[in-house]
Length: 381
Image 1 (cartoon, one colour):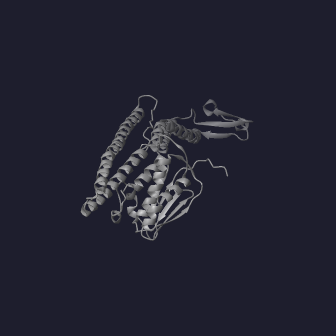
Image 2 (cartoon, one colour):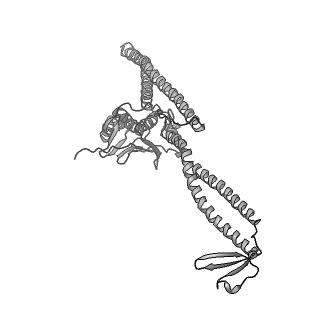
Image 3 (cartoon, one colour):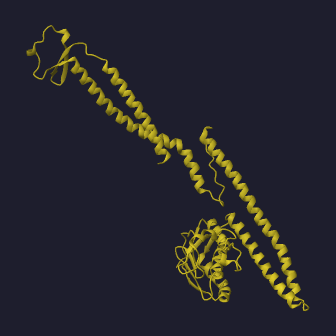
């Protein structure tokens, strides 16, 4: 039950208890009242009723009374009055209770409005959008204090996230320079005609290690950039990005003996073309690298982008961990991947207000579905 409903129920319950107590008090006070005579004659004159106290009459001439006249004792009068007061009070209490419920609902809504603002702001927040604030106006009460505390917490979180992202970006940039120098030195050493076979084998291993490090740093840069959100946007045809990335991965697929099956339609997205290319490229390279010789990769772009590959069986419980940085299945550690592929895909999708989900493919492999908001613009046919 929602808080507003509970508050309304409390308001109505308290009102009913007070109303019942008031009716009971009136009924109890009325019980001590007695008519001024031992009996009265109740008569009617057309539509007007009249009562005649018997203590004012020495004798009562029945013949002078109308045919519908009733002679009542004091006790009967008292019971009739108390009964009338009771049911009329009950009707008034029911009507007032309905009004109390409605007023309680309205008042509870006004009281809880700041909480709704806090909840709405919290729903809009995520790691890439910490610029939302409540900025509640009103008297300095408990709700205003709660909203201000929430805003202060968001300020601290935003500062912490920005500092972390800047550190990752700066560290990645700084690491690229020594790696480039190392690669140059290794290539120069290998180009020496006097280099021995052992030196060449060691140089090839070092070049491979250097390349892995460069890919890791490039991945970190992309991850840091997408986590900061999009600073600029433009219209991008996602189907063209898919075709370009399929062509870029053709050599890798040929080396791994993996075939592509592509089916797309025109799909326009408002976003960053470089990051979108990284998203699609990471999906395709993962699908090829974590495949098996003679396997296949299916790419379908319709309501969403779906990439399906064959390969080793992926346990369902291991799928969520694949979206965490540097997390890979145990049997995937021998590949050339850095463990950032799906992390980058998820980060880029979130930066475009999209989502990513994955599930094991029947018979082995993985199915990854990326949902990106499609714009309403269409290319003229």
